[in-house]
Image (cartoon, rainbow, N blue to C red):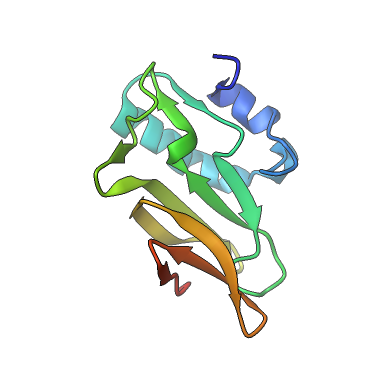
Length: 129
């Protein structure tokens, strides 16, 4: 149970491999809370790998990946997951935060193509809009 953090602590206690609390965009909090209230309908806890900050589009600015595989709804650690994968939201910063992916993914990873960062989702490259 110590692995999981409450919503309040998730923003405060994120590790360097994920994102620091100071790093989490306050503008994205309403969307995070919307998922918590509309989808989960109870307390939601977030693990250390829930938030990943990385440059996904080559602009040298850290973007945000929210991987619900590391979120817990009440006591259910698989609530945000189904046969077609877990909820995944990706936001790019371009003069403000823009959601560039909102769906389910069985797996995702970072790679590069001609020196440009690429996020692969279920074996297909994400083309940030």
